Amino acid sequence: MLNGVYQNAAAMTGLEAWNNSIAQNIAQSSTPGYKKAEISFDGVESGKIGVKGAFGDVLQRASIQTRGVSSVDFTSGNIKITNSEFDFALEGDGFFELRAPDGQLVYTRDGQFKLNDDGELVSKQGFHVMSDTRNIIQLVPDGGRLQSAKDGTLRQNGQKIAELSIRGISDPENLIRSHGGFVLGPNSNQITRHLEDPFIRHGALEQSNVSSTTEMINLINVSRSFQVNQKVIQEHDSVLEKAIRALGAS
Image 1 (cartoon, rainbow, N blue to C red):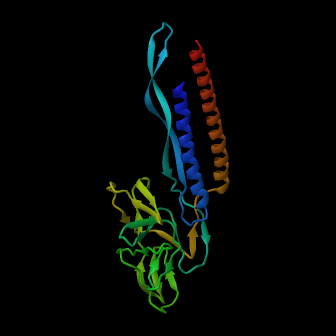
Image 2: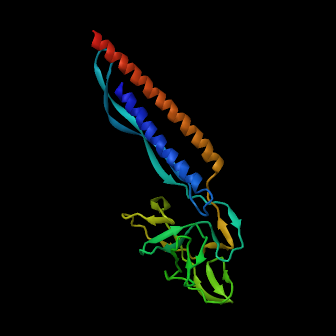
């Protein structure tokens, strides 16, 4: 009896995690380069239960509960032309490399950059955009409009000032989402490499790969599933209450 309650409670916990992922996706659906949060479910053994067999023997069987497993969908989003001087969109593999104020390297597909007060190219969070040599990209004051080749080479008035650091990561699934993009996990032994032949669109942004319609449908499904599990727990509770009363009266 109680095992059934525990299983439904575990299912509700998984549905809550799914609901949080959906809420995050909807909130970030308009963020350039955002990658959709996903959650899958699998069964995990949570002890043994006794089941009486045909001949009166008690058989030990595994009790299975639901567990949610979070992941990120790294498929590319659509490209939107903005014609902005500091917008960049990556096509294919790779990530823009940023450096946070604490020195942490951050990887992102959001190429909506800007200039800070010192004339340095930074992300919207204020993280420095890295060059291929992992240096800060400094623009020339009054040096003309910034231009970019498809390989990330930046020029002003035809003069090269830097090349964007576009990093390839062998297994993006090991990246950890952080504010402003992704970071390598503390136990990760991955080595990022500068992509020699990236394809960058200047004056464009990669959109998020979230479908707001799909997420709203998932939100409805989660709500209905949560209600079903809640009703099942209530039924278990009602049956247990009747059993206690019957035993107490005997």
